[in-house]
Image (cartoon, rainbow, N blue to C red; front, top):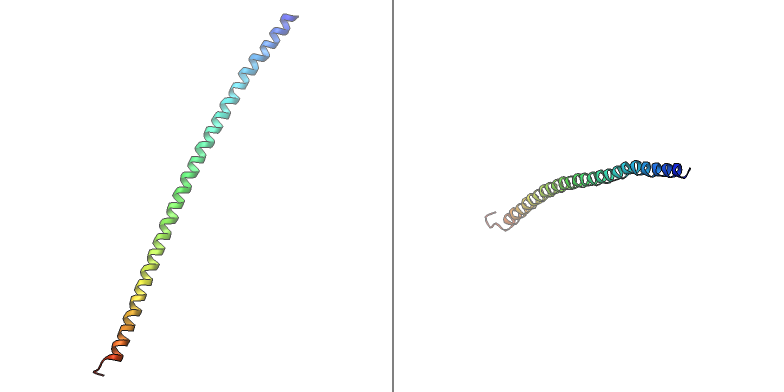
Length: 90
């Protein structure tokens, strides 16, 4: 009877070791995949940020150029007005 209990206990111990092993592997694989997914998400976020920055820089550049041209036109108009007012030949 004791031998039978010992054999049964040994069977349960070995069974739990074999059944427990895949759980550890699955947990490790799951953690590894989670880290990979996090890395991919970070990479995608960095790409999106880079694209947004590029877009904003282009828009800002165009706005500055437009503003500069407008200021130059207004300066030229003012210069013509001053010239017209101060021209002694009129």
